[in-house]
Length: 160
Image (cartoon, rainbow, N blue to C red; front, side, top):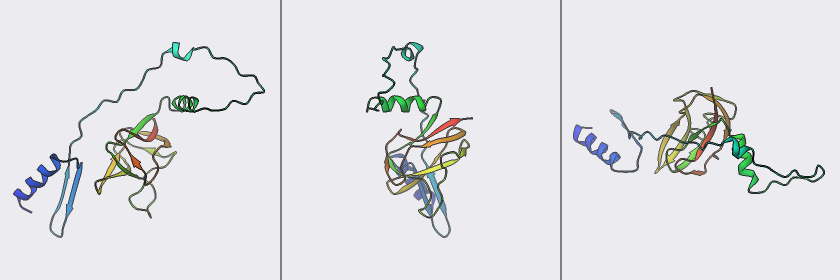
């Protein structure tokens, strides 16, 4: 591969939604990775006043039914203090490099910053997703082989 061909491939990656391109033949191996802009994640802040809202107590004998409104609140409480590893792109989530391989990480595993945790396939390109935090995987949110959106949580991690 000559310089002109390489420059053309770089321009193609820069001008497209492709995040990574890897070309390999007998004599050459080329990997072009598009730089990701740094995005600061913000998390909502819950004040004491929001926690202290008065609630009516249910009778002791009455079963409490979980409604669609209480489920997200319960999940938000369970996720307090956890850091999400999110999808940097739209694609298909894969827990392992192949169907025969074990998952990169599972619930309860410890991950290091920069460790590959899964793959997101986008436009027939397999993109290895790395952890941006060191800690313990508390929950795997994404389902293997299912689509994920940009910014959707893949894992919830209890940071070290």
